[in-house]
Image 1 (cartoon, rainbow, N blue to C red):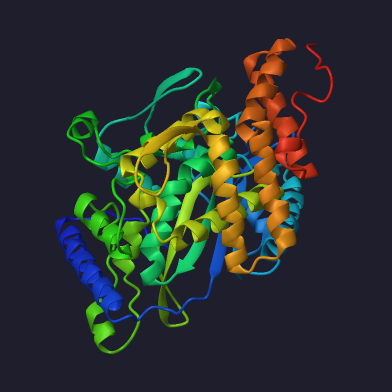
Image 2 (cartoon, helix red, strand yellow):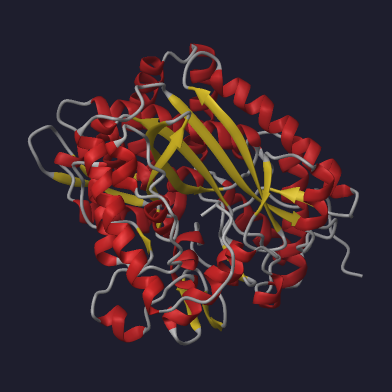
Length: 504
């Protein structure tokens, strides 16, 4: 959805032409797969981080346009709301000391962005959901001034035909309504990309689905929304509900939401793109002039623009990506599970764990998804979102069938971390990089600590010190930002505020 979209109205002929073009694109993708037209393996990874802007008081700042003008770098882009930015790190080969290089690039980029934001009395905060956001911050007037966001909002609102209901019951219960998709902007995430060959795509995607719950368990960082303590990772239910084009009647009929974990293991990337056409009406029926089948007949690489645009309006937690680079098409798995933050070290550790364990699981002769029902993987994901580091999962035991219940931290420490180590070795990662960043994940498991547990514990200490809820959330946010910039991994952060707080 990063392409320039011009706002406008769509009539019946636009939608019919778009449907026809989607069918041509899907046929084109099928031909490209059958004719093996895709790029050869390059072991490339990519990284995007969505960021928040906040003032020294911890409150959101609606200043992304002014900050981006000062940053003046193509690596930084707008995101959905005026308090959001996104930073994109160029692709890297997964080998050697890539994670140390990645960490250094992130530190440099984020420090520069933070200095530029300071020129308008704002600062960068990497966190899943900014705890100080209020319902009045998440309204359509605070969406970024970009045509594609306006158009996407208008189309999702029109498809739903009524207000969006947010109903999340966790530690506390939040129930409210919204007239727009603006609450989605509260969700800031890390997106991990991995370029794969068509023959490897299904194994990598299935592996990513299987370990999504473990990623959330160790990486949860979004326990608060609108002053309420909800799930340890509240982004998934918030994202689903704030983009839900289904009124209650369609939900009751089993129509699938646009934010979706999925419902089955796959055998090809084609399965996911075909599902997108079969299950989801077009939101943005904008047609390109290209005839994809004619381009293929000439030996070229079609952009499949309609398929790519449609795919960008369906929010899978592991999304397939088709793109043409250097005149050659390629496929990527885009992992959208993780929240932003807390620190650069934590983000890179999460990436190392993901790339390592996915490589190892995809290489197994009898992989986990042949022994784990898909419904169990989906239930694990929800359990991780609700309970974070304290979640319990269903997981296969032995190589001949059967599953059992296991604590997430025990599964990660005893089974998944050794797999991640083997996977990073298979990528050719230097042992120093491997041990440093997987060691961060191990320490989170040992201490049962992640960003969400730190936020919740610090918030409750602030309440116990006599602060009101709003002041406690603001103080927690300010302390979080301070420790984020210091840069030590979150498992080492001292819980609580640095000194007794004044109540005066």
